Length: 169
Image (cartoon, rainbow, N blue to C red):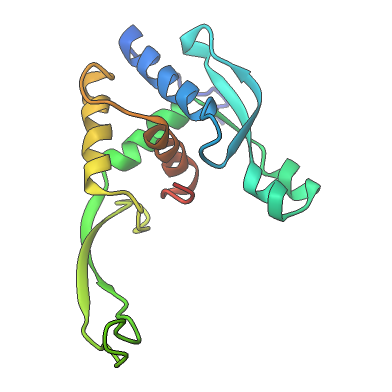
């Protein structure tokens, strides 16, 4: 049995800095998002990581559930989230029709179809707009040199890595 761990793929200095910048943006979210950082290190960029907890559990659950929600995220986590977004597929879904038409008060049985992004591996709906995906992919393709990401994009990348979908954004 081989107990060695396969080395992480070599990354350029630009790629390391880009992945680190996304993680830092997600952690230093200024009140947006679900994460609360405990242990956190951002220098050197290659060693960037954070130990996060789901702050919504603290608000609605117990202290034990909150402490159990602790997870370590690092550059590999960010790369995983970007990979999920990169491989996402568009699928047509049937939108649930409204039970009552708001303007006339009568049942609305018309079926609507939408095309939305899904996680290619799990089939989960990503809950991300095509525009947000395009922007993230532009940044991903150029290591942040083109495109522009913000805290919501950074949190979406982390959520895709942890949950396979954007859950809180």
